[in-house]
Amino acid sequence: MPEASIELGYPADADVMDTEGVASVPAAFQRTVRRFPDAVAYRTGDDSIRLTWTQVAAHVERWSGALSGAGVVAGQTVAMMMTNRPEHLIVDLGVIHLGGTATSIYNTMPPSEIAYVVADARARLLVAEEGFLGRIREAVMDHGLALDLVVAFDTDSPTQIPGVEVVTVEAFLAREPAVGFDFAATWHAVDREDICHVIYTSGTTGHPKGVELSHRSALAGADVYRVVVPVSAGHRFLSAFPLAHAAERAVTYYIPVVQGHCVTFCPDIRQLNAYYLVVRPACVFMTPRSLERFRATIEKNVALEPDPQRKAAMERAIELGTIVFTAEQAGHVVDPALHAEWVATASVRKELLASIGLDGVVYAAVGSAPVTLELMTFFLGLGLPARECWAMTESGATTAIGHLNEPYRVGYCGPASPGMEIKLAQDGEILVRGNGLMTGYRNNPEESSQAIDADGWLHSGDIGALNEFGQLRMVDRKKELIINANGKNMSPVKIESKVKNAGTLVGQIIAVGDSKPYVSALIQLDPEGMEVYRQQHGIACDVPLEVLAKDPDLRAALQAQIDRANADLADVEQIRDWVLVTDEWVPGGDELTPTMKLKRRAIVTKYAGQIDEIYQGSGPS
Image (cartoon, rainbow, N blue to C red; front, side):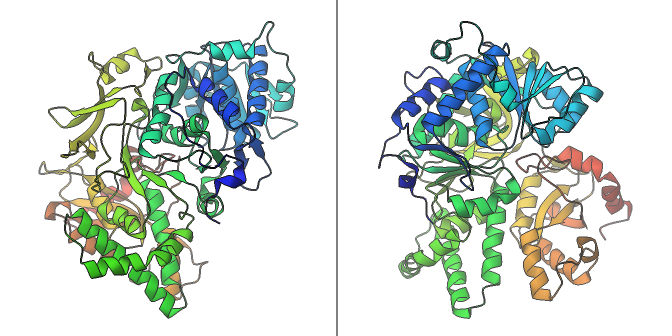
């Protein structure tokens, strides 16, 4: 069923308001409560929880009172370790209504990292789900984390932690507020420059850094979407990526709070595709990896379509979309007959998007990593209103974002967002200045001063380029390059993207070759692509990957995909050898960040033995 805001109780065509004169995120929240008191704000996928803005506000006030009774005052930090659920944001709002600072912990963090992040955030009170208390207990017992109080969801008998008071949510909310606590006066006192959230960069190496973002930064990020995505209030949003991530907070926390939209929470990102089909969200944040998985699903559905006529129509619609938008991106005039034929496929294209729950999207922001021309062209050809965005946690998550009504070239993210400036240093590094910037890194003034210079420019560490429209393109990370034995610099992202777009079998790939004579790769199979391969080759679904990895036909098919990619790469960039890895790489695990970026250093270290074996012979195998 396509997105329809009327079911959520919002007035038809209700406009969204700017943040001029709004002092804080709590002030924006309270304004939305007054505007849409009976409209649905937060819900679960099965509708077992369905809260109006008035009901959310009552829960927030209750949490603020209990937190004040527990001794939390303005400027103090409260940590949360929870899945994507309405209570996650309710607790968060309760904290910041007090003038406190909230920080969310990635649910995949090991105990040692939990101990580091909570201590660095200076949080002594932690709100968590019972399922995470085992790791929190280990963080306290084995890694020295000091906590005063833990509030536990989803249990009547929480796991106990020696030396720490652990209480249920019900017991905590029964506490009386602090003497003299005035909820309205407290949130009215919160200022734009107060620290709203500490967001820990997931990072690809080392300990994460705590990025302090003010209410000014949060409001600026939300207001950007009012300018680039002129939609009415009351749309459906889907929260599935970790709420410890800056982009997820911007899209499914700040924007709905400021503008008034309904958020459905997906507690397990592995259920994301199913939730898209149910929720059919309007505005979404997507990583390139998400798009790759959606494309793989479409290609699988088409490959397995039993009706030959219907299958041919789907294939032609995809083909025409690619032709039309490849020509557009190259600045060529599209043959009128082909364009007319593409227009005539609108219903088929809509059906293909509907099959993955993207038919209700009015704006898709694609970011977190570079996206390829082939991938974006595929979805633009289907009619998905997608644009690229670039930002860092340190710049407030919405630094450069494409406008739907402006010229667009794949690879370019749009000009600087309202209130932001972008320029390039002499070496091409992207420099950013403006309202969205962080206040600094928590407990790290030295790195803060290195990140933001005396003139207020944030040094991103990304190499970029600007086109004639002032639109930004990220070229690569300054330090994320392969420099081979002959001193040749290469972009691993470019090599990896070519391989993934040359076929359907490769899911994750990391190109290696630093100080080596040639480039090699570690490869993981794509689940969707493998489902099609199994059916087409009569391979039972219970045959394990460890067995399939040795199958000569599969290895030949993989080599053919790599060969196609190599044909589009310079000789020095071509992959000469590879290893098929059958270990599972999960978001937030050893190999991937929670938003599925490669942890390059960690992967190279973990698979050093396999990589060494590649280069031990006289040449590629």
